[in-house]
Length: 369
Image (cartoon, rainbow, N blue to C red; front, side):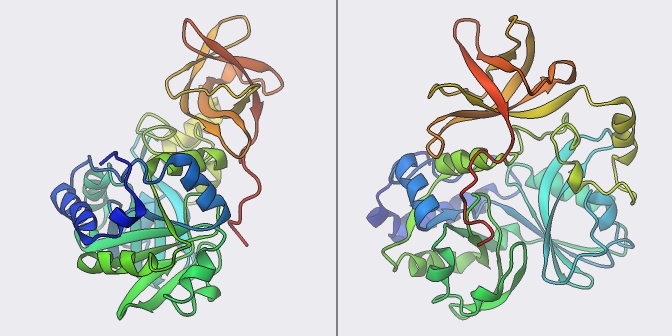
């Protein structure tokens, strides 16, 4: 799937049917990814930051859960507090193993008082479903609707203007809220969420009709498709974690800088392990850095003190078109985490000097406009 595809070819039905076929085969799997690029990463970057793009995220997983969040066991699975969520709001959180490692990061949608939708990552969908089924009580209802649900993400400062013709009333959505809307005759969930740092929306659509929605959106010539490559650049510029990079079952949310999404006032799986980390300190911490030149730090590079002492590793790196320099995210030994100092990143042959900074790298997005 990692190919360059022109927008005209993209609009043709067979391509989208190929995507649908892939998902139908891969649900409960771990391997399908969206195309790497269409027109090109830089063109798709400019389109997302300045206008509007569409990401085909049909591979994501969706679970519906029915029941009181505490009696059902849902509140114990997710680190964020759920009991005080307003109706039709979304909340980011993590699901942990007993050792405090992240099984997955996810978003919870509160549809009604005792009705929930959980959106999970594609590569972890199968183990997530097993974790939920093994942790929910007998009072909970659980339905995995991933194979029946398509998903398109419309991102960019023009996304509201473009979508209001297709989704009447979308202007009422605030950041991290959702509602049901009539779209092409279907009553579907549309949320004001995304992964780019720009104003954006995610549409959950019946699987067999998602190609109709795709084609309807692309009737507007201002809309361009965007792929996995630019999504990674955009999310790194925002300092957002990606599962498999900044998060996995050996990394705790405290190490990953996600403590604000952990509610220690309630019980949850992994709580005791995180309390021990809070007491004893974490052995490593997530850091954000930029190179002093245009040279790009890469995933897997090691991190060194200026005395060439190896002290950590890079989990994500890219060249930032917005900053015109290399940027990255990594984990540094807590003993060496001195943000006032410069560090080196690279391999045995080549090293790049970097300086610590704070996220987000890119600060001019339309996210909450």
